[in-house]
Length: 174
Image (cartoon, rainbow, N blue to C red):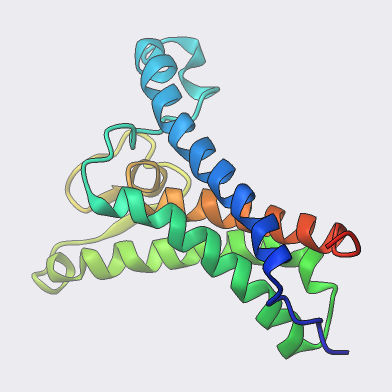
């Protein structure tokens, strides 16, 4: 079963607004985190609202990762459906993507701290939390993820999957 070609202009004009909306959502979440999360630190609500610290967007990575995440996922889903010859992949893609992202960020943390490990310092990537341990080789996975541009890639990738699913749902209209 070959997946139909998606090179028509109508389909890309359908996708462009979804990309713009997803980029605005990621940017709005970053601004909202600055307004809501920081005043609530130290209160009981601190654990309800994710601590997204990427509101300042000081690196070009923060601007580019939503673009890369959205289009990487959007284009790779169609390739994967053709390659594996299965439309079931569309429904299971978010789970596979989440697992892939969690594992790949964990590996990147290990490689980033590899010089310390080679120097003889222990490296412990704490997943889900370091439970009070800090410094001396303890790396809090979730804290690092929330403060990295990879979090934007992750969110934008999920939005790319939603956009692809909507494109498939409304393919008859296009």
